[in-house]
Length: 181
Image 1 (cartoon, rainbow, N blue to C red):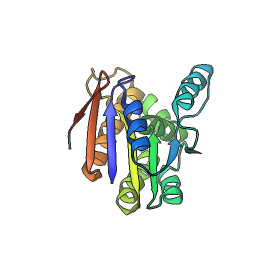
Image 2 (cartoon, rainbow, N blue to C red; image 1 turned 90 degrees about the vertical axis):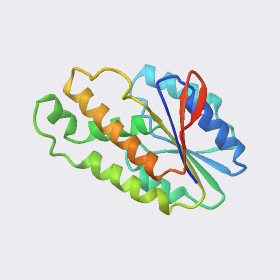
Image 3 (cartoon, rainbow, N blue to C red; image 1 turned 30 degrees about the vertical axis):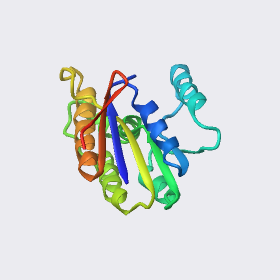
C-alpha cells in the first residue's frame, strides 16, 4: 500500500506518518531527504531523529529517491519517506532550474520533472508499504519570487500526481488527520 500524508509546516504530518509506520508491524526504513546544510536544519533533523524508534533503519537520500526506494523495498518493509518537499527543493537547487527561474528564463532543466516522473513510475512497482510525507503549499498566496513560484507549482503538481497513485491520502491540519482517500 502506498500512502501520502500532506499538510502544512508543523501540522503533525510527520508524527502521523511515524505512528502509522510503527503500527504497521513491518520493519521500518526511514528514508530521510533533508541535508544538514546549516545549524537550523541540523536542529530540525535532530528533533526528528529523537522521535524515531531505535530499531528503525535510516537511509539518507537527498536526490535519488526512486533508487533508494527500489533498493530498500521488500514485502515485510514499511518505507517512510520524510519529506518530499525537501527532496523537491534539493532537486531544484541541484540543477539549473533555480538559476533559470531567478534569471527569468524559461525552465529548460528537466531534472526535477524527470526525477518526479521516475518516482511516480516506481511507486506502483514497490512491494511492502510506502508512507510519503509532503507539504501542502497551495493554500497561501502566489509567491512573489520566481524560484518560489516554480517551487510551489512543482510541489502542487507532485502532490497531485502522488495522490493519484496512492491508495490512501491524508491531509493533516492542527494535528488532526482528514482522510481524503
